[in-house]
Length: 299
Image (cartoon, rainbow, N blue to C red; front, side, top):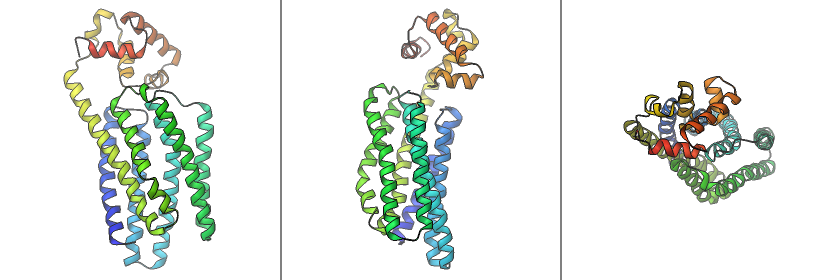
């Protein structure tokens, strides 16, 4: 592992830490349902890159057995992180396009993630270059299955993504992923390219999320400065305090089920509140409600 690769790991860690800081800030202020998972995932990426950097440095300063320990930890964490991605990306996409996960999706992606992680661990136990190659091919096919599903689902539902920042980040992730496919292909055959590809993947992903969170937080701050939506401002609609709480959570993008969990009430109760809100405010859908709130005198 050369100096340039170690430098790439270092830059990747620095950018990932900045993305993590903004993700934590977004989690505190926005409370989007997927951000908690992303914070965990980004933390794992930083741990993986840190272990990879320590693995590279151990080649220069430590005995070979120390390098072997770091290499085992790095590879195990990498397999675990990629298995997490196989579940997380479809879940994130379902949130972006406002279509809750179906039972069939859970039955498909969780086993795929377990297969990816399982054959990855097997490749560390069985010391065979031939076996390792086919494991790499198998993992690539598993990951591509998830990726193709996300690509097709995204393009079929692109127009339904209301939030421009969410739509842009989905497009950016897919464009960057397509651009990195040649690097992924060469990493199957060249170990040096494979070592270099890991920090490049993490760096590209972290930069996209960094830009996304920065723009999202900036927009949120500007909207809070402009908006003074309150229970009093909706007095003419005779909105109750509980209904106002539901409206706020609808504005945050939560589904009825997520609102029920947030307010510790049943989904049927939330459905009744939403129906009453629609009736009082003269709207027929969430889109109409959000449009009315956006165009009201308090906006």
